[in-house]
Image (cartoon, rainbow, N blue to C red; front, side, top):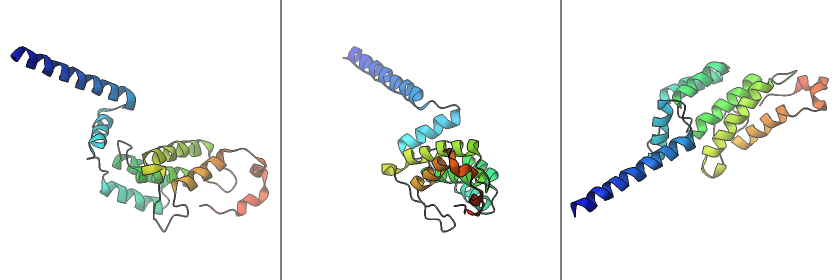
Length: 166
């Protein structure tokens, strides 16, 4: 009887270890912090650092977009919070937006982050209720970023200096 117990425990450990290895390959974490954050997200205990999030939001409203992004990345090291990822993408949009041109590199980075936010959101729908923002959904932000990446005749339109940033 004890022989069967040892075999069963060995098989169980082997299965658990296999699941862990598959999970590591599937999530591709680059640091141990990302591994820990992924494990917390899988167990439902992942939380962002609210203090850092609030500090980043203040910087964002003062138009210090790069500093705000860095602070949000520290607040959400596992990149698992849809709302934080939305704000990071919005900061890329705001920093890359220009009256005469768009910074395509910043818009591409913003598009990657907003896609991550959409994937993290329940049912792919993310709505952020911030009265200081002109776009409240990830879909709106994604559309603006994609529009900024598309080349077109509007790029040489002299009247685009009168457009408004969202």
